[in-house]
Length: 365
Ligand SMILES: *Cc1c(COP(=O)(O)O)cnc(C)c1O
Image (cartoon, rainbow, N blue to C red):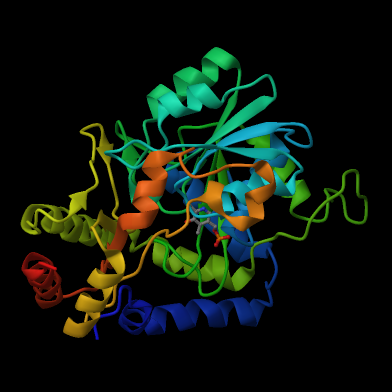
């Protein structure tokens, strides 16, 4: 069975290097925060091209801390796309703010600037744009709206490590960038991890206090804090992986563009990738008339596929109290009903790519 993603291959490719890095952390007992987490923060900030980065315990915390750094809380509204992983909406929700769901475009499947404009009220404080599936959203258009209304713009980069928009790395564009290093993301920890990036050092300084129990000077707590530090072992593992990220990204792009060229089947709908963006194909998502039927067909050939994501955020039960219904975000709803995700990861072999392409092209249910 070809898995949708096979993390074991990378581990086996670089096993000695990873184990050496983990052993070093153990020898130095730099387990929570500390030297190896700090070193990764510096490397990652340099890689993304921002002034500062703060390593945290996961991507959801990164989003929550970004909201807190911007002073967002009860009574505020934050516009987020309906077509995203639910954690994008948890960030504002945890602070007491209300997520307001915007639709995605029919072609790029990213947050739709026109829908964002329609969702703005007097309470709107920020917009979180998501570079979903590794495809940068229309940053400039959304930035213009944010600037006109005096709103913050935060990037959810959980799926877009090393993707570029007009030549610039995602995570360096908005007021803050939020990354996840959950296993399976383009850059991932051996456990949980996340990071907040920014060109405004004061945001990162404040996040460093918040994530460390609200503490700058030991045992002095000037603000209510959280325990959201990055683990040392994760920092060490991430430093090893960061060296390979460009190589992995090249492979992802090769496979992604090849799928787009060679999968030719009128039953499928493909995502648009605007010229001014350099996507990283975190997930290769396409639409099919009957996803469950397609998944079964692929499984029969020995190919595991998934669906990202079968329920759009605005129709999740957790947000039923907000009163959204079917028809509020029609493009996101269409995607939820028709999306399928093909296998795509850097260590796939050419034969496996062939297998996926052939299977897709022969599908005719
Ligand atoms: C994975 C993901 C998150 C959450 O990251 P965790 O590290 O799992 O908490 C947030 N947003 C998006 C778009 C994601 O894909």
